[in-house]
Length: 256
Image: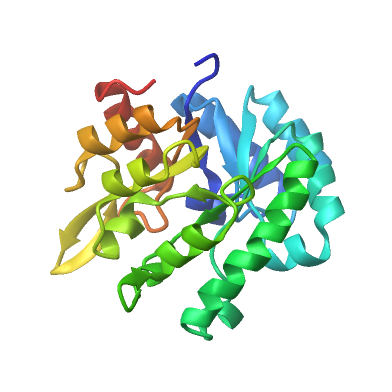
């Protein structure tokens, strides 16, 4: 691969990226840790041109984003323009809106159709569109889960996957197995680990928990994953330190 595969998911740093000055300071720290790419999510509001200038100044690239589904349905031309400005090919939505979730099984069928339409429009502009899961998508409807419905009924060329390893495990599924199932359909994966803390499933830095990382990373290599986005929604320590620990452990696992 000609570019670095590790990226910092900025949702991890959302409390440190709310203003232009804070965003600039945080990007300096991210670069000092050793990351050379970021996923834009949970920042600002910061004008897109400012975002571009700051990441460029710090030797970073934007590999992918999370965009609110409302913007994807109501403001798609502006979303496309932003990604062109950022030289970013990969667009993702962070979750299924409540209106779909509240509709039960039919909500998954409808979202598969609606997401396909959005993905086709993004594809026509040279961009990809992916869905980021949590664990609610593993609710079963007969013999199928919601995530089964979503990927079985959407156009693979229009809707891709941004699997989250923690949330797949949280839903009772096997992250490596799901990566292999979505082979060549997942440009970006979200990496976070899971530990049991005070009897509860808790997010942890990669390599500090119980997930089967050799199996997950082997599946990613076989499956054509382009970017490995390091994310931790909730950190037990300073989020910048958490990003650094995850990076060191991934390097020790052979991922550069």
